[in-house]
Image (tube, rainbow, N blue to C red; front, side, top):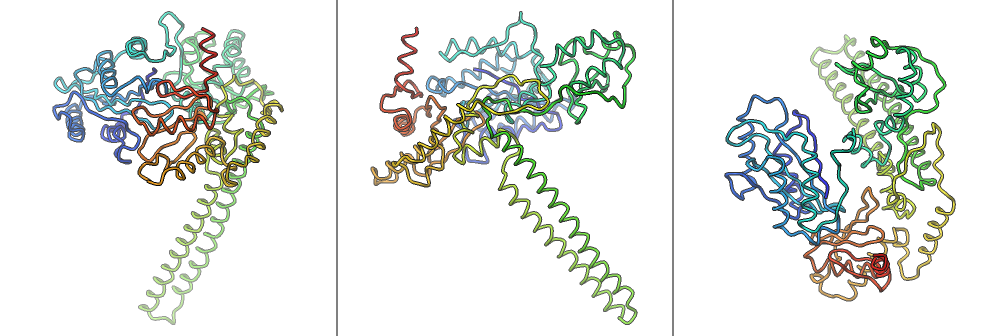
Length: 541
């Protein structure tokens, strides 16, 4: 079990929007396992309780900070079979007590749309009676201590937590979120990997000029920002708070060592390294080169479209402006006729420009369809959903430290790539699959084969579990199948998970596991895996 507070700026704080998201109001609850409210006079009326919270927040006009505390509690896939609706509500109550929100209003919901079942909790930080704003101090320690207690109490899988006696980890939530969603290294991570070099440069430097020269070798610089300092990429606007790197990088300590801050402009050095948003996955093979080529090609195509639009816009405007000018200077026309013709020409000009904008918008939409990704992870998911087993393997691979190389080569060992290509080649020749399914992922093709077998075996559509089934690949390489009743079956590569309390999902998961792993499979809770894996684990103990 892990939890995380989602930070929000005061201008973006919107309790109703968050509560609607928790209940999945836009999609009629398709991804919500359950939702409820607590601490409200409205009782179990979810919608009325939202209005009660908004009224309470409006009664506090003193605070200029956010009034909503958004918490996400995430569980491992194995935990889904252990937890019940009563357990989820009890876990929420324990978090409320630990954080000091026991008397506060809140809206809660459990979502099942990802590989890990997770719970959203929206706390109203304004006390319903005192009308004062409350924010828990150092809540991460309280939550981490509670995680270990709840894991023991409910028999959940144990996760690592932070320890008070350890050196504090100066983590950046935004950087971690960027890396999780994009699969690429953040600037924060790049700077922290070079912390030793930066500290040595600070020790050797006699003044700001020498320090700036040393930092320029890795493509960064120190800039003043507000009352403190920031570490900035020299080739972009990306920057982080300097004190996140080390306690010695506060403005006062730096100026005490190097004197009053001075910015050295026009530095020319031979860069040994620079920040590039490199992928975090192993065995990238030729995929990263393909991704960079696709991004570069799309950028060039967008630039060409912009040039074409600007040129045609200028030509159209010039043509109709000339017509309008000629009409204005034509003294043979009566004033009334001239005005009508000028208005007609202006209308034709507007129509031509709108038609041009619509045409260019259509071309940009076609370009987006050809390359429907903006980040490395999105590219991998797109390739995987198109049937590329190598892309799925990359998504499932573990992350490795980024090597300090300004011109990195992302080629994987030839044996790994050839092994995957051989597997794909053998899969293409499988006579049990239809030709159109052979261009999909092995996992998806096997599930479609199971769907076809079920359709032949069961005449009554109401008794079929796989009709109207949909699937997608997430950023961790898990293939998620959604059944028509909202239940999920999740392929993690070496294990199959399914929604608990759903006999249809359990039946599908067991049949799917046999097609993927062979006849000898073992089901425990909501998990299905190879029999051999469990036997080996048992012998190891």
